[in-house]
Length: 150
Image (cartoon, rainbow, N blue to C red):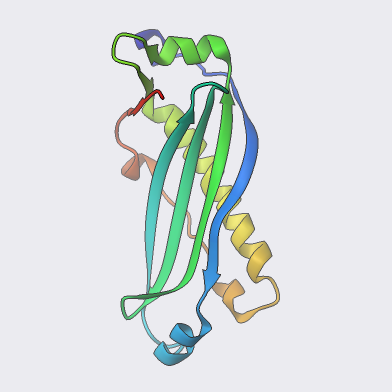
């Protein structure tokens, strides 16, 4: 794995999925448009070792008074070149170690994609004003991600 720390990992965005999207207009109406809005951000990861795919899921919940009124979660599914996959794989413990810089890059792509999905799904509605802000992923993803290979 160490040799991949400073090398480029060859990959491509294989697929994009919308995992979840919902708007609760009642919660939004009851809270009123002047209420403070909080945004909860979540990242999850998954592997498909057979296909050599790493998935990064980004979830965003817009909340008013502690209740979600707008939820979106999307996934970016990245096909990793077999040689690079094998370099990150530790057969001894059946785990793959994804360097933090690589994870940050995949997460950045997935966040941008989620931002676009949110815009497309809310275009022409009053909810289109709720944007996913720019996010400094170096503050959120601070270490390599180690995942169990199934």
